Image 1: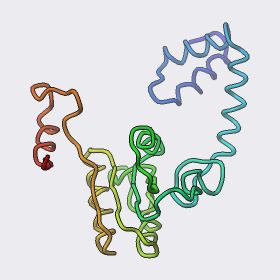
Image 2 (image 1 turned 90 degrees about the horizontal axis):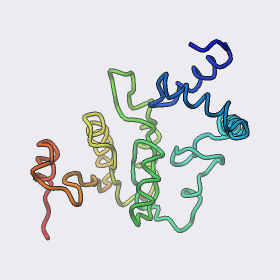
Image 3 (image 1 turned 60 degrees about the vertical axis):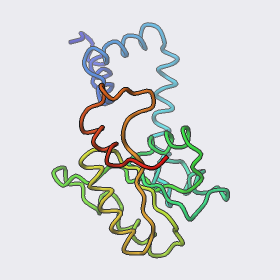
Length: 198
């Protein structure tokens, strides 16, 4: 415990970040105080501005500063394709790794009844309205391959199919460069059952 109450408060505040425990928070706090006070001030200004000014896109629900994010505001995206992901980070990953040119819907989580997260908390009512009122040709489910992610994908696929919308799921399985003997049995079973023609 630090002799300074303010340093203790700084370390406590830093511990709100994922993966930051007591020692990491202590290193961060002392680094800023000893070596980078300008960086700490800049961090605090940007942090306050981000907390005040960043909200959700009215269309896809990702994080942004405007009513519509840049992807939803773009005329070059295909409105007939909708990729559904759990987090804004997933959108960035898909944008960096693929040539997907459709639109997104960000759930900001997954169904988890034990944690009190149901369809309402994920905005699935808004998504269902979008299924009814839009000209979607395909919904691509890109939720994580966890029990909760699979349950979420199943729930959404039923909503989409009820409106006659083609529903696909991103493939899961053996990573590029992976060797079968080192792949866990669940991943290998999933990859084997989802095999396709070449």
